[in-house]
Length: 66
Image (cartoon, rainbow, N blue to C red; front, side, top):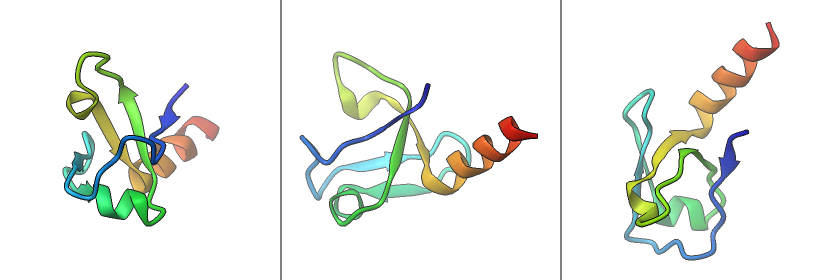
């Protein structure tokens, strides 16, 4: 199960790199309502987790439904 990153602990200067398309989502975008999905969580350093943007996650979910 993929988890959505919550706003808790996110700062505007953070950036999240999508493991599929390579796009960055900024912490400011997350604070403004953008969704970033945690593919693999790094418990020692959340910023080093593996992320997926909302568009790529939607594509993954569409493929799973087929």
